[in-house]
Each structure stands twice: as C-alpha cells, then as structure tokens.
Length: 357
Image (cartoon, rainbow, N blue to C red; front, side):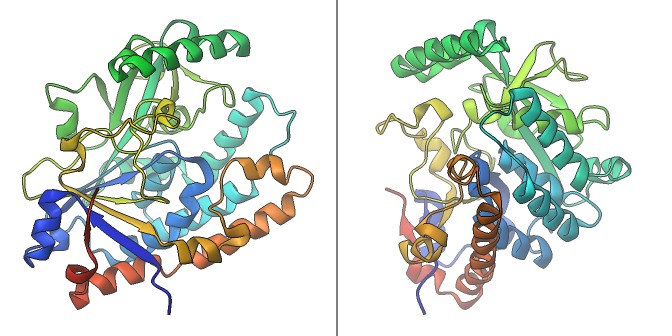
C-alpha cells in the first residue's frame, strides 16, 4: 500500500515527537489555508478529526483560516457538524460558474452556499461552542483595492504587488488584517505586538458576512461592505494577507499548530505565490505540524492534480465532468485522517516525522 501522507514539523514539534513527548492535546490551533477548491482534499482529514472528538478536549481548539479554510471550519462549530460539512461539499461542488459571471453573480453563489450549510438558528450554538473557537481572517481593502470597477481594482492590486515585492510590510498600506473571532477573548495571536490589524467579535449579525468577505477573491467576487461591528469599508479575501502560514497561532511553548495542506511549500500571502524566496517567518513554523499528501496520492487523483479554480474554466462547457472529478478527489481523500491517527496511535509518527526545511 502506498504511503498517503508526509508529516513534517518545525524544530520544537520535531524534537517533541522524536522524544515521544507529543500528544494530541498539545494541538491547540488548526490552520486552514485559502486556496479555493483545493480544500476538498482536506475533507477526509477534517471529518475524521471532527468525528473523533480528539481535539479540543482539554483546551478549546482554535480553528483559524481565510477563505475556503474559514468556510470549512465554520462547519465544525455547527450542531450537526458532520452533516453540515457534507452539505458544504455538496453545494460547493455543485456551484455553477461561467466565463461571463460578474463578481456580483459569484458573490450571490457564495451567499447561497453559506446559507445552504449554515442555518441562522445554529449561529448561537456555533458562537458559544464548548470545544472550538473560530477565527476568520479578512482583509479590509484600502484606496484603489476597495473599488469594484475591475480596472481600478486591478491597478490597486498591481501597486500592492510591487510594494509587497519590496517588503511584505508594504501590504499594510493597501490592506488591513481584520480577524473575526468567537470566544470570550480575542485569539492570543491577535494580541501580540507584531500583529498588524484589528479583531472583532463574531455575532449572529456578522457571522455570515465575515465568512463571505473572507472568501471574496479580488476581481472575481464582489467585496463585502461595512460588516456589523467592524471598521467601515470593503472587506475581501483574507488570503491576500494570510494565504498559508504567516504567524504563530498556537501560543504556548509546548503547544502545536496543525496544518493540513495540499503541498509542502508554505506561502505567507496570496501575492507571494511567484516569490520563491518569500517564506513564513521562523517563529510561525517553529511549533508547526505540517501534514500533506504524497506524490503517489496526488498521482491517484483525477488528472493527477488537486482540484483548483482553473477547473471552472477548463470544464466550463462540461460542468458535470468537473463535479464528478471533484467528488472522486473527495473519495480518494477520505482515508487521510485515518492514516494520520494511525501514525500517531501506533507510534510510527516518530519514524515518519521529518524536519521542516
């Protein structure tokens, strides 16, 4: 049987695992990357951990993510979590898309998705969940990036890219990180001196709007304006700032951030995708446990690739084939969580673990 997963860890976690001192209660944060349909291969991993109830038993688990990462984690907080997660997959995979769709039309599709798997009367339970805390990362657009006219927004993004090329800190001249959170207190990562942004409590009145904003991909999806309880403005995809990993989410020295990803490479922000040398800061990965599929697994997927947004265009004239391929990828991904737990409970993780390069 082909190995399905690679498991790598930052220095602190690697030593912990090698010494036999790692246990699941030390996972206090689980990060979900932005990345469109790529999240579908995380479904088996997510659902196994969700159904097992092994995380968040001694201390609430922080579920933190942007865009599709936030969409999938919101399901964890709902009263019928497994059914809600499956419903999210159903409506997400079924989402129509054509080359002529306007950003407003795509936003309407996302609104339909959110309403289909999150019922309004489930929100009080989600906000007060006893074991999980949610942190939704959004980006409040400034200046030209706040415009809905594509040419103006594109020009603003081009300026932002050039500024980011010089120094990642220039991002914050164009975007402001705004984190919407559940729980009595803001997540500890938002209280650190180097946190650049604001934090806003999630309420019934802003829960769905924050999710929608976090998934509002620039140029493709209309932004969300003036979210309740948050600074006024236009909110867009949180992946613009926090695409993969860019900060430390688990706070304590012996606490671990879990990250299931579709690849080994870690990219701090969406605009860093072409910048091969742009890496997350060392403190962001020191306590990171990274799990990602092997080449053998990826080769087994339809077309030998992870589902991504290009599939909407590739199969624009044949959406049924796209949907079939995406469901096949979900089916292939079903055992990934079980393999991870088997590595942990058998102790084989001590042999399989590799240091993050």
